[in-house]
Image (cartoon, rainbow, N blue to C red):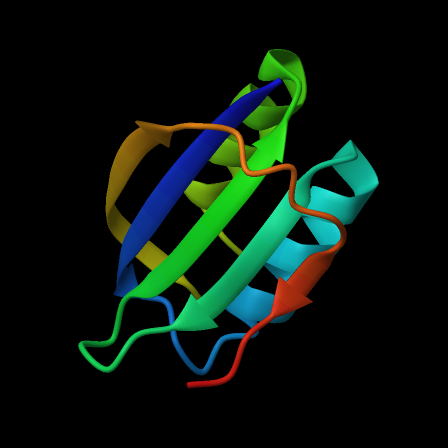
Length: 90
């Protein structure tokens, strides 16, 4: 099990990025949270097996239709044993 914090940059708000990211994460068996940031980026924290995380990060590089991802900032962190996958509202 691994923990990643991901900042998704580009045209990623107003394109259902959070809802689609949650659906993809749940399908892959990941736990965590996603929220829009005031600067226009999307913040994600996710935990799960390495193979599922790799697939999720690959999806994050593309996002849903309508999104234009320009960059991902990915940071490793300690496991927090997060349950569920939430969409957070600022």
